[in-house]
Length: 160
Image (cartoon, rainbow, N blue to C red; front, side):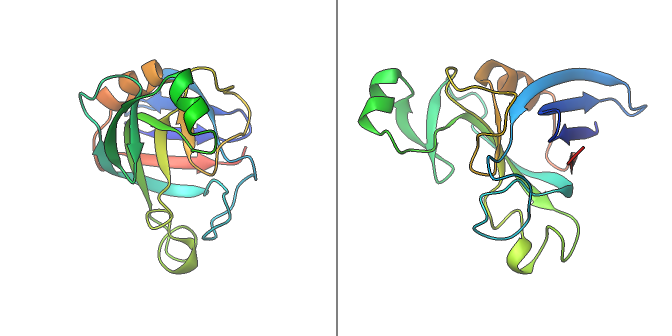
């Protein structure tokens, strides 16, 4: 199933083989815009695949650090305890670039930059760029999306 992420619209589209849109999700991409360089905190553009799916069957709001569940479940109390944490919740879809020199290998490698599609606290605003470069989704949307895609699915991240 082709997946399109439209940065300008802040939408993720899941399509069938005939490019009929099956589902649309509101997302949030990088607050620093788009770009591929390491440490840019920007969302990388171009053709990608889902390289790994992490967290299948984890409870909603499971907290992940370094792609591993911490044993915590996100709450506002936990957020107050760790005010500077970039919350990665519920599920992770780890992306890998397919375009050598653009989003793969060297100083532009999406996979080595740890760019994910992941859940975020429900109180976060989506529909505007506010992430640290990853693609954020509502947790319930992420579970639905996660259950409908496979490792190796194509993801195209477009600016327009």
